Length: 82
Image (cartoon, rainbow, N blue to C red; front, side, top):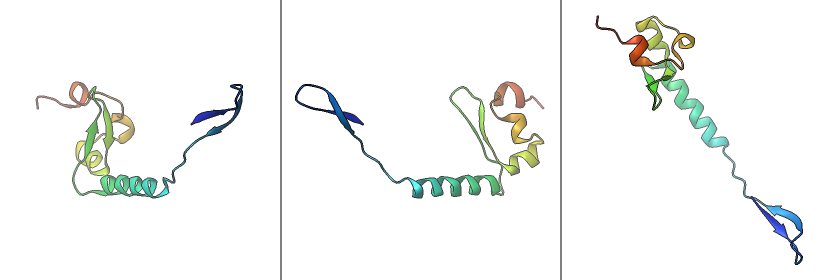
């Protein structure tokens, strides 16, 4: 957005651009649903190695709930030598 000004420089309004993202939000929800219900373990980590995606299959196979792993370091806390 940007301001609109009159000849004296006083702000008299603003100009902005909007975009309908309803379709994109629906698509993101569908991707999340597909990841969560996949028959394979799916997990993601951020640039610091912290878990930010953990699907139901990963939970069943690994034994940690989403709440237990989210935001924690995958390598430091969940990868072992066994």
